[in-house]
Length: 474
Length: 166
Image (cartoon, rainbow over all chains, first blue to last red; front, side, top):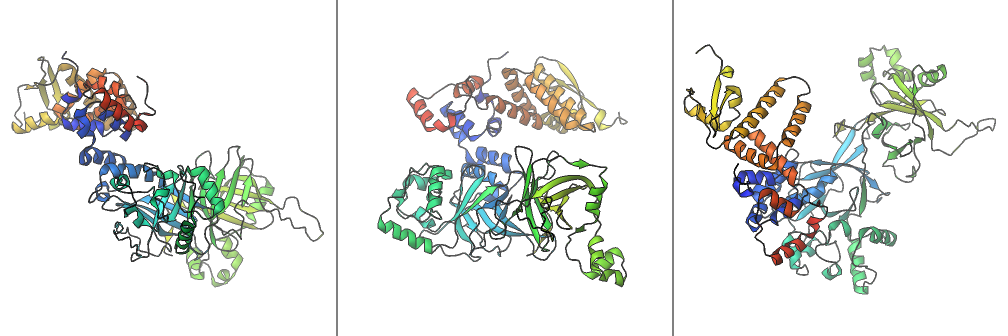
């Protein structure tokens, strides 16, 4: 047989195809093998384009992200990090009361950007879900990362133009009042969104030439105008958060964020500048945490995000989480802290062993006598649906019953978190007052209720196949 | 021979060593170079088509791959699983040299899917391996001076973490 084939024996198409299956690390390794292949490894429109296309081509329009001076290599690096955003996140912490900060975020791929939507229950008493724009993440012509935040979610649901900030530093509001922000990761399941008040500082002369060469400078935090407060240029962005809500958070940050400059030795002038900057903020920093398990699985059928109409006839979102020791807990998502403390679950149990059919008479009675809380239906709709006479429509209890109760497949005992135990008329405390049930239905949704009342709150899926269902206009 | 449908027609191919292979025309369609030759000859191909760059070992493997994939695709259930298993075995059955030779043959014959599969297989082999391994595998001569190589290594220090030992 002929002597060993070498890489040079392959036509360039084949060479590029092989390289396009590798990760950036391996491309770097390959470029170390010989000078002859360095240009191959840096060929942007052929190699790096193919790498982007291979990894994300089915999800977005790779060629539309790149205009002007942006390289596909830069795009690869950016998308590798942003890809982690896709999915569902919840706000961590109570959220600033004055500005509408979303409690649930859903990130998805668009053609030219990644967009994050706020997901909230509709307020029209139905099971509808409102999906409004919150964050748009893209690249400008010169490769700057441009993240734009929509504070009120009122803007058009279409991707904005990702214009770079002009050199004179004037960051006026765009037509839809979008605010430039920084999104910094702290690990894979936590990020912070902060206003980028001094986007311009990235273009000023205080920026080192290295930062300019990179085309963007995410490691520059907003606000601090003296560039020399910052650590080395090559610092990975996941470590430098910048502006902080308060002193305590600052300390937690420093612990987690590996900042190189302590910040406690600021001069008086810098402190004053900091104060002025904070006063002009339109958006307070918010933290978000990823919800990893947002859908049920065969072994965890109650897991994930659900929506249900609770006893005040409003739609609410719930998150059911399985812990490591075989228990589950359910919390409402997005309540203001006054209403429910963040740590008190709606229901919980430490044992997830279901009762199977046939059920005892006691259990059957417990379920059959309950009213399922359903969205308001107009009389007309009910009449249409159930062919009722006028007399029947008038009876409100019948209305609640007639919506076709689901058939129960299995039952689970649960407890509520309410420590509030109300003695009955005789002054006795019923030990079962916190007890409740989950009724799992054949269509794999479930309902829950407590012994102390007579309702069932039916839970439905918020997401199906990765998409939000029942979207309504706000 | 007007009664015979297209899919039953046989094409004969001749390798470098002179071995003849009879191939169904439906399979020959996947060998785009061959198909182009057939199209150019106005479908009038009676004598064996010579393939001056292709050895018997490679053509045999390529035809094996194509025949199996056609068979899987025409089956109804579990085609994906079967195909994946076959592909894995196919890749493992070759030495590195044979793999490289097959790439050249598949490239010459323009067998797109197979070529992509082989390229991915090669990429998998060099995945996470050191610079020396890649050089050896591909027969690449190092033309960096020791100083240049040291400098490169330092610049790409982050890239060398997690690389397997040879």
